[in-house]
Image (tube, rainbow, N blue to C red; front, side):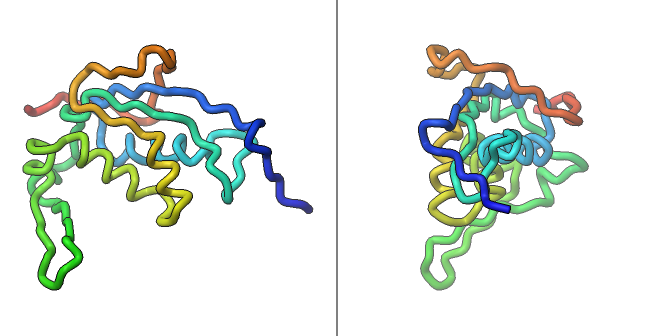
Length: 152
């Protein structure tokens, strides 16, 4: 059996928009990573970037389940010895919610040049507005994700 390899001109990319208000971060991140990777398409090839563009709005209103906002930590490292910094998800979400959501999603993509290319198709905005209206994005529903009441 031969490996199917679509040609670059055969790849069709759609635009999707996700309203993250009240969605659980992990459930939303796994579905968005799946669409960015292209696994939802019948022409998926693991060695090519087959994914679609995803716009996430209201990233500041995403929630974490069971009190993880205060228990779970976000780590960053400068690359120097002793250069690790850790803050809680609540602090990270209050400072830079778009970066926190982006890091959660890109952590689920491949750790190579292909994953970096997939991550460029992700656009995250803390508020409800985005400048991608000319692309006519379709609304993407996250299956199994229930909207929880925001605590903020």
